[in-house]
Length: 386
Image 1 (cartoon, rainbow, N blue to C red):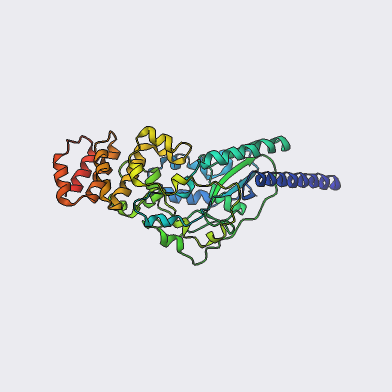
Image 2 (cartoon, helix red, strand yellow):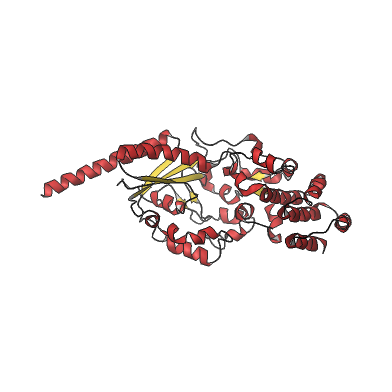
């Protein structure tokens, strides 16, 4: 009887090893730089950390995080039958320091991850290919996720050994620094598990010190309400006045904490299938972007993650960059946008004009401006004219 049990266990182990080798080979073939495996029980501390984050209000207006808290807390809450979780990493490290553009106030800085096709679509397409082949080989159920589902990808990636969560709360890899897209495949198959990666941050504070808005109340803690990525992407309505000068020319996201990570020196060894940035998204001019109406915005950012925030929120961000540029050649563009149909745009145009025009000219312009019925825009006029 004992020999029979040992034989069954050996067959199960052999099957797990073959399926593990298969999924990792598929990942490599489809261009993923990392593929490692963990269990659904590997992140026991994550629920309490998530609860602390939410209780502190650090999620800002991202109400969906609170709404999905229970499902997000544990992979088995999301899918009770899952036995193994395969985590995938795709390097998207830039060929240059993305902070260089911050010294060009007439240009707009778009976060590295958003300079090409929406990575959700790219990675999910590859994961579906792998999942289809794996399910056919294993005869097991699978589900794939890329960021949009309530999956705690970064803790799971750390548990699988892709890297560790750095002091900026993002995943850091010894092979690819802070530049990894993540995706996951949940399966009912038993696979061979990889070891977690330990924290290699040590005493380094580079990412914390790089943040323009002091969005890290402590190492490993992020207050999204102060984060430029949150403010320019997730936050709706007027951006608080205190953060506008700090945003500079960052119109979509912020790479400062990622770019400051010393482990990025290893990220240059990119795969051939790495997403390459569109040339026209590397350093677009603020003047050009201010001229985009809704149709032109949708066309220009077709297939890009930038498109999901919509033209009005995007132009709001570009107007902040315009105001920070101090380039008076943008005044006429901003005046036109001060009469835009969107109050979100009008309000930020008022602020931009207050930064670009001298006090006398601005007050003369304000006196001649037509009446405003939106309370937020009225407040912008009041503050700008004070």
